[in-house]
Length: 126
Image (cartoon, rainbow, N blue to C red; front, side, top):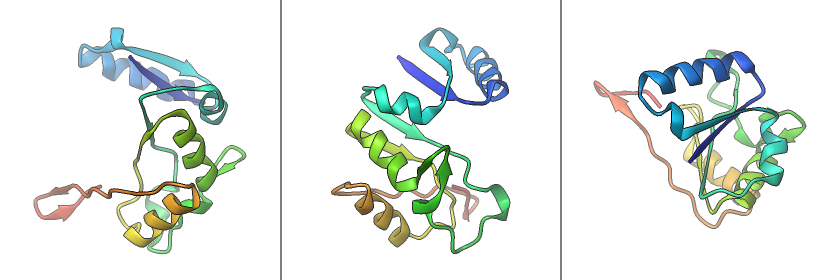
């Protein structure tokens, strides 16, 4: 079972709509709540993080350790996700360096990290 959490009800409505289109609406619980609060009490197989990180205006010097999600910074966000699940996936800006990802993982207590980049027509997309 998948649990989708967002503090923005409109985003949850969009996610519900997309889930219905793809025929998976009955496999997802949509929770309108603060993700940090949910992570503090959650137990899961996998946590997928996709917090707002500033959109197109972020720069090459973006540091995921200082991202803010409510009262939590990037390190606390990953640490909470790691407490909830042994596997954590994190969607981050494509300009983020591997060294920055490693620093975030290390600061959150992760022993290892894997970085995946997605290309379309030889252009980095994610």
